[in-house]
Length: 124
Image 1: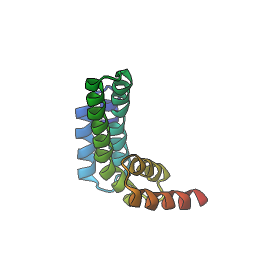
Image 2: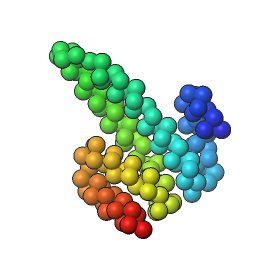
Image 3: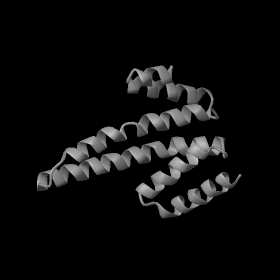
Image 4: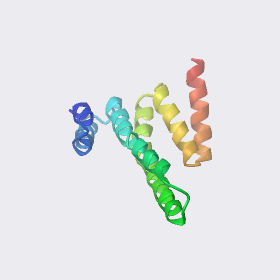
């Protein structure tokens, strides 16, 4: 139901369904991954808004607000990706996404940790 709601752009219902699935089965990796994807899908709208801005002081202020919103999206997605990876340590997609997010939010310790895990998974 979460996937269907997400496809229909009913974000709140999709989140609710994914949360219910996670509550019923905390090891259901797909629900964590879908929730993270749902959150991160909102990034494109923010980027589009950022790209429309000019170079005025007011636009610079709006740019920084959008940048903060984007960072918050990343932070909101992290727990879902971490749980997905914890439940499925061979999940390369979760590891790569976490690595990229940690890089974007300048969390170097976690970036290095995930980079090592990604490299180890890619070797196997």
